[in-house]
Length: 100
Image 1 (cartoon, rainbow, N blue to C red):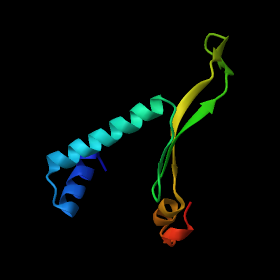
Image 2 (cartoon, helix red, strand yellow; image 1 turned 60 degrees about the vertical axis):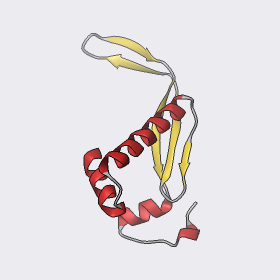
Image 3 (cartoon, helix red, strand yellow; image 1 turned 120 degrees about the vertical axis):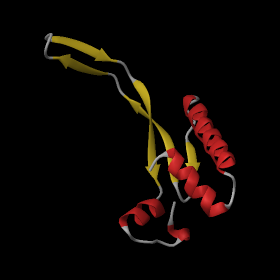
């Protein structure tokens, strides 16, 4: 499913114009990116969390040149789905009050 498909689906379900839905989705994505760039986690209850994971420095090898590289420590974005999200994908439903 693409962003355009999501926009169409939301517009159809809510009756809101596609342009307004697209603008809202773009603003949401930009807000998530900006806040994660500031190393802030984002928690969406019942959906999941956008979190920053820290990767430690490590040594890698380029076997074609027979050299060793040092990959510095760095942060990467990650998504951790909520229990209800996982259950829905697995085909099971759990009550709202049981989720984290």
